[in-house]
Length: 352
Image (cartoon, rainbow, N blue to C red; front, top):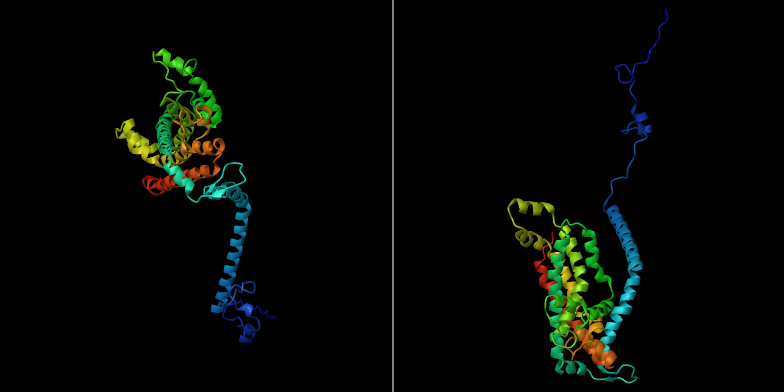
């Protein structure tokens, strides 16, 4: 009779046990996961952590240098243009304002603050400042009020709304000089379109060109016509960003359209209003082309603003040094107005 020996299964009571020497010879045999398990780095000490921190700081510095290089490559051309065409003329104008120099003359005499003293003591300065203030107040205030009203109208569901928006914005992209020439014929007291329209209601046409204050009124009307579409378009974008659920909630509460406009829409439009006030104020103070095309500062200087007086003193009278002093005064006025708006007016702006 033959006896067959069958080895016991591993882990059974009869199975042979691995000796400690075999386990020492093959460490993978006792490591969890077998021979293919990752060994992993040994626990790092303080020195290793300092090396890793140094490596990370070097990578961060290299990344910052690369980002700075890309920023310079992308913004460098614009910075060069700003330096050449904005800041260099500004500094040069400040220097010229201290000279008594006629345009085209090879000789310039330093006078210090003499040009500024002459401007502040000139008899025409008060009239020019008053005209500039009235023109700016009328154009900025009128454009804001009329532009908001036009935007509210264009925001309604009206037939042909897209065409109306295009027509309203079109004058803004036209040349200011061309607009001035066009309206110059329309305001003609004898043959102009305005004279015909006033005749239909039995009103005689004023002397728009020669009788005060009608030349300034004419300039204000033309400036508003040209820039009204821009203000309306910006306000229209702001109106379309007002949440509809707020307007629906106001309607459910029984609020009238005027109450919803005053309590909901206008507060949410304060960022748009602030932007328009800043941009329109700066543009109005620097207005030149319409005045040059229609009145050339007349009659008797009644439409001469600070901006137009700079042109008149430099290119008509040839007093480049004095004109540079007036330009510096205008720059300081623009800077002060912008600083006041950013400092105080922006506090009342509600950002959603």
